[in-house]
Amino acid sequence: MTRSIPLLLVLALVAAAPAPAAELSKRGVMLDRVAAIVNENVISQSELDDQVSVISQRLAEQRTATPPADVLRKQVLDRLIVQEVQMQRAGRLGLKVSDEQLNAALNEIATRNNITLADLPRALASQGIDYGSYRENMRKEIALTSLRQRDVISKINVTPRELEQFIERQKKLPSETTEYNVSHILIAVAQDAAQSQVDELAKRAQDIYERASGTEDFGRLAVAYSNSQTALEGGSLGWRKGPELPTFFAEEIVKLKAGGISKPIRTPSGFHLIKLNETRSTDANRIIDQTHARHILIKPNELQDDATVRQKLAAIRERILKGEEFAAFASSMSEDSGSAVNGGDLSWTGPGTFVPEFESTMNGLAIDEISAPIRSPFGWHIIQVLGRRSFDTTEEQIRQRAFNQLRESKADEETELWLRRLRDEAFVDTIS
Image (cartoon, rainbow, N blue to C red; front, side):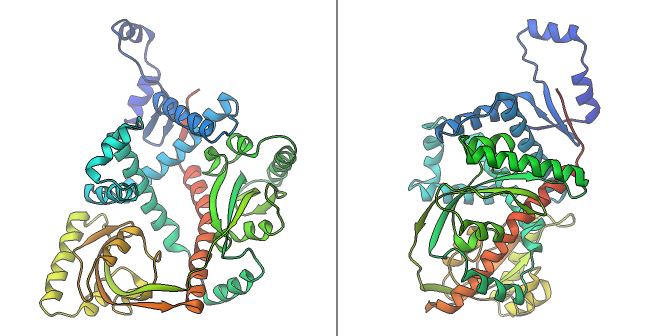
């Protein structure tokens, strides 16, 4: 576990005299060394060791060749550093995950596995997983997802012209009814890199391409050299429909056969290598169930915490139930700028439009019912369902899906750049 320790104390621990350490060792007290200092916090050697063990086991299960121990250890430490930098930013912004929000996420996991939340600890224990650690890891994942939504996704803009161009381009790109299993290697290039550095990284990318095109395993090369957050999964991006791929991926995917590898592709984040592992076809469903809803969103901040925001929304809900106008509150108070101008109206939407916490609550409401305040990665909401219908969305669905896919394809690249900036702005000292 990463522990918050004042920097002076960290330095004191690192520079501790050998005599006291020897005395502690004789008494059977294990001393945990520091692997890295990240701003005001530390990453311990035991945390690094644990993660190296987990990743090594996962690579073995995936039958991905493991790189040399020192290379794997460096990649794992880099990931822990990036995660720590994100968690510190989330902390500064007050992005806290309540027990209620955490339990809702765990309940969803339990439901998907056909068990109850109460049975989850026992099910995890049967796989050798400690429930307490699992909860805290899940809390961290939710916090990081909220941070990415705030810092990256919410700032991605899709213009009408981009949408029209994207729809036209889709007609020449991989089919939306085909899914592609893709792997990826990123050789990152700093935004302020000198030309000589860019040239050197381009040579490295070309060398990796030639090795991957020969006899070397792509997954092993990804673990060893990729700067992407998917490096320790062997570069795997999993299954994605054609339009869900980043645009520069899609343009190369159509040129590849299963097992094929692209030559290095230059983008603002660096040089990319793409491997198409396999493809599969899916059926396109044109008749979908839609929900017409509206909501009011209020976000916690330094001046009002989760409890305050929740109480404020609960009070608004009571006033609406007594006859005041939902739309008036949404227009004046909602922090969702896109819907506030329309009285909180979210129009007709299909499955998968909203984050799971929001959608599951919305789906459980009766027509005209107003939910109690619920938490999502964006903040606290109250939701009212105005109607439901089954709808042939052939044309509308294409546009909505294109919008979501264009935003997601932008998000991959923007996330890599955002993580690189966070890492570059942090004080990091790795202890050899």
